[in-house]
View (cartoon, one colour):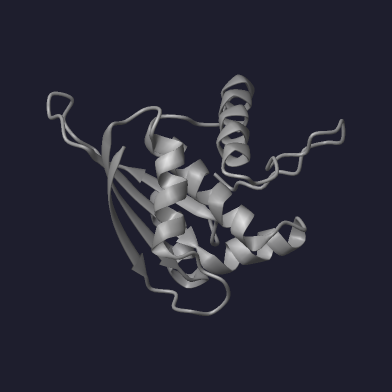
Amino acid sequence: MKLQLDIDNTYGKAGWIPDRKQIRCWATAALSSARQTAELSVRIVGEAECAELNQRYRHKPGPTNVLSFPADLPPDLELPLLGDLVICAPVVEREAAEQDKPIEAHWAHMLVHGCLHLIGYDHIEDNDADIMEALETRILTKLGFSPPYQQDDAPEQQIFHD
């Protein structure tokens, strides 16, 4: 798969941030079954910017882990442009700690999750959530990470704010 990737880190170097190679690897893994070529922008932000975007576009207060903004292209225009992901570094870091997950694994999960939203997956309805979670699990385990969702009969921990 050919991926044109634009990364904008406005958050800086505080905490652990994946490098370009990791972001490319995770996005490619999420998109390769659906696209031969894609253009994607990833913006890494702090809580203030994420909260402002979350309020403006989703009408929800506070920051969230990942926001997906699919490209709004006319149906007859065939361009590889997928859209933009905004990932809130401090929220991802906090969630990884709360869930006792390696930070790299949670970053990979957020990239995969956001990319799947850009190609049309969602988790609003339970059946759609099951499909999306199974796909996320398959992609992440192929990348060498543990399954991102609980595998036992305990109630699942909700990790997405969208």
